[in-house]
Length: 304
Image 1 (spheres, rainbow, N blue to C red):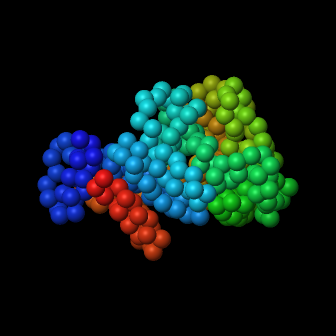
Image 2: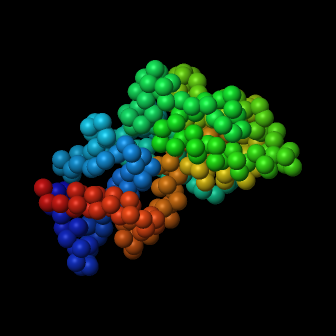
Image 3: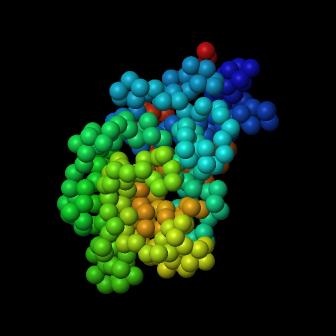
């Protein structure tokens, strides 16, 4: 039945015919799935090469290595279970807010804190040894630190630093946060979990630490005061270069910035999506984007 519904929706959209309320309900899921797959393809263009639909319940991303990663495993999960074992849909479910707020988010709101380790391993390295082969020393700002060279992670960090560090010369509120930074690459497990830290992949940087920065160290009142004082320009420079900020998590981690292009691209392109538009409207009109849209449309709107 789901297979038939998907085919009908694609047919109706193609011929500009009215869609029933049930179809609209299903279309919302289909729309978000397509948008998620599109931002993943745009975020990891050298690593995600295709999409495969085995059934309505089995949609896979095809990696350059040949590995297939399921989009949605259809399992009901608690917030903690989504952090421990997210599928791609879980990882992208919460839309990252691009506006800066001085309020601590609800504890169930952590956009970007769920990480898909199969995807990260495909892109940045699947073992400590392979990750360390991909590390490169930064040439700007923190030249004694290393960052992953894959998927332009190091280039984007340096672009953010080139925007921020000149401001630090006249802005004490910025320089007091930048120096000294707490570090980048560090192969370790997140305390209290069995999950690797994103620092293990060399895709995160912690700036200067303050006792109010972390939800385990600080009260919400202290964290809120710290958020209010955090320079907007610093956060925006990182987000502009595809880093998420832990200050926008309910489990706040204010010193933490993490290279997650898929999270930022979804927020930029589809954060305020209107269902009256075509599913891909909001994404940039470029040749590679059009190619990805064609791949998604062909595979996901094909009859099985």
